[in-house]
Length: 240
Length: 180
Figure 1: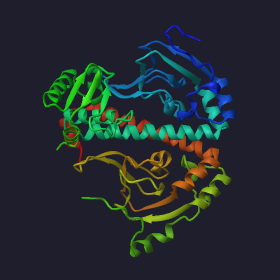
Figure 2 (figure 1 turned 45 degrees about the vertical axis):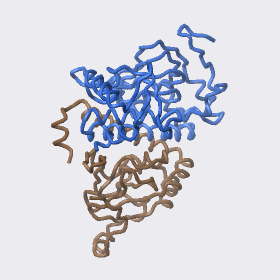
Figure 3 (figure 1 turned 45 degrees about the horizontal axis):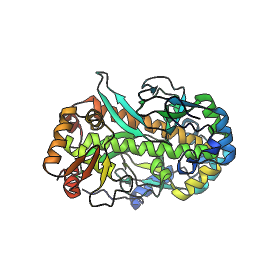
Figure 4 (figure 1 turned 90 degrees about the vertical axis):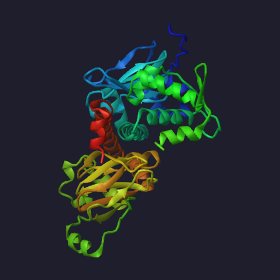
């Protein structure tokens, strides 16, 4: 079935072909049937806000298709992007489990399919299905590790250049590019969004990219970035 | 300075602490007040069978970041400093863990290296559970798994708070001054 946003909606988790590759979704049939009865499949356009930081938790959002930007905000409106969530991730998990307000704001950056589950239904589901509970623990562990990584990067990096180098190396290690001499990465974010990921200004990011290009450490080909000198980028990332 | 993991305390220290060790979780009076420990008897008995009691002196490093997760440490008595470290050795304290907390949980569950370093601030009593034993215990005992999910959610909230304060709260000069 096609939705208004051109998404090919996956109606049932039981027939989803991507299930096996996704940490939370790969559940035994009994748990999956039970999950199927409590979830609401929804399609969102680009730019939709799933939940806002500080809001009371309504439930979890399983991201089936598309990408979602997870950010936190200071009282002066300054934003920090923590992560770009990919399909298979469960959003709003810790707030739903603990009953505390959502810690992050999540906003779709592509048209997305999201399966929403109400908090009471989800907590009951976890109590009844230990496999699902275990998978939730694994997801939370991963999120915790990411948050610690973020604190380290933000709190202990010396400069914006160091943080940008770390971010580019992290992105280049994905999609089978890790062992390549000159890894390529698709820059799906604007300079403004990259600035929000490393806690600096848009102007600084633009200046840093210009500097990296001038020193032939990176080369831009449209929206693709080629890391020409991985050694130099690693040296920048370790502040050497 | 490279922290070294010390799991077995010196003899003199052991003599002083031995009497204080509560060998069994089943007899622990503090259990109802602690999120992870407040388990039904069957789960508690199973947990008691897989854990080892350790008495560790102050400054013991239970695990350090980058080290593969071998298990979890249930903090029965004493406090631990949870910190992250840069390549240059600069440290940033994330929080201070208090009795009742389970340390090393996220790395043990995800099977990755520890993301943080845990160092004891006091002389402490710790219950050690090997990773393999923890995973089978959680698979068999749903209540314990739920407690773990709740604990991880709380840890995550604290971690996000730290991200907010480090990333948005202060300028670099103040942050650098706070990092030891």
